[in-house]
Amino acid sequence: MNEHDSEKVAGVLLARGYRQVEFAEQANVVLYNTCSIREKAAQKVFSRLGEYRLTQRDGQTIGVLGCVAQQEGQKIFTRAPWVSLVCGSASYRKLPELLAQLEAGNRRVTGLDTDTDETFETEVTRRDNPWRAYLTIIEGCDKACSYCVVPFTRGPERSRTSASILEEVRQLAGVGYTEVQLLGQTVNSYADPSAKKMRFSELLVAVAELPGIRRVRFTTSHPRDFGKDIVEAIEAVPAICEHVHLPVQSGSTKVLRGMARTYTREEYLEKIAMLRASKREISLTTDLIVGFPGETEKDFEETLSLLDVAQYDGAFCFKYSPRPNTPSLKMEDAIPEEEKSRRLAMLLEKQREIQRARNEKLVGRELEVMVEGKSKKEFQWSGHTSGNKVMNFTSRAQESLGDYVQVKVVAATPNSLVGEKRQWRVTSGE
Ligand code: SF4
Image (cartoon, rainbow, N blue to C red; front, side, top):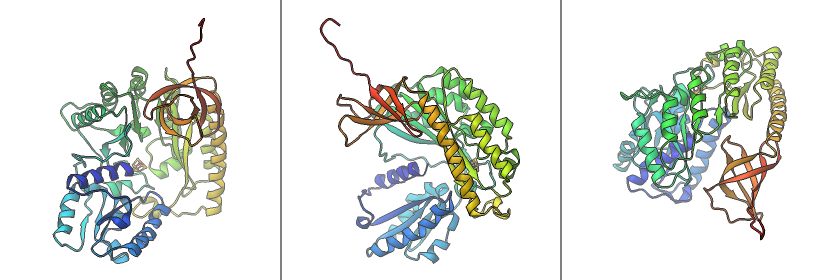
């Protein structure tokens, strides 16, 4: 989401006549987009700002964007007085105006409002990847999970109209994009503000059916709003990728309640059962937090046992860290760091074995892969399957990046598949 915000911000600047340079030292304006979802990411911001100061030229403007900008606000000017712009993501619409104020000689400008019902739509978005395009369809979050900074830093949920999304995808297909990834902190809570009132599942189908679009992905889904209609859309339309990222965070209902996740272990597992019963084999990934305040050994064991039932194809696992402006900050963070590390290591180890077994089941299958990279090793290529698995494969053909090829899985590791592209050999008599 942050990467795509940067693409949109770059687009805004290009449309105003700015030019992108390769290194920060060459720039007249440096905009540093930041993340505060975890403590370490936020700490890094000030050390990076210190590095920018060392190379700052006379007249060079340094701005801070993103969640740390929103969180720290004006305090950034005190801690890093060489910064002249601070703007959170809910105020990006104001960026042209803020830049104009700086160009007019203002010394310090801020965009820190989160109380907005508007989305950040740009005329121009400067995308790096020529085949896969990210597209934000819903900004902000109303879910208020007790550990999360997003509702504070990104503001309330607000969706783009279905017509504007479909028009952008049409344009993307027109210039050669074949894969689009619909983004939102809670993408499936999408609520079309236009009279059409298109549901998220209907939007998925409409995007997937646009000429030229071969793959549609979406992330991140919130379990509460994940309904059967989304599974039915995946079943009905092959272009909707067979992958769902459904963060669970904990396997214990007690901890989920503390996190204000709005579902129980049992309710979440019902969603998993629904996904596993799909006619298409859907790959499932999740996010997990260990060491949330009050998480007992028994609670943690429930998370481990949930992994056995859910059989995820991938999981992003983190240790809990208290974040500013979040309700869980008031809860006692009583679990020692070493204990959090022990739980994290156990979780990772268990998940690794599950992934290995799941990937091994795919050996012998033929899967479609988008060719995304060429290795330095001869005849070695890489890409992703529809289920979002990384496939490293051998092909003696001169593949074109962005093409789709059929690859047979010949081996598996916990994090990737190894494949061989089928070689069509025509010999006499055949
Ligand atoms: S749903 Fe996701 S983004 Fe929203 S508050 Fe919860 S964790 Fe944060």
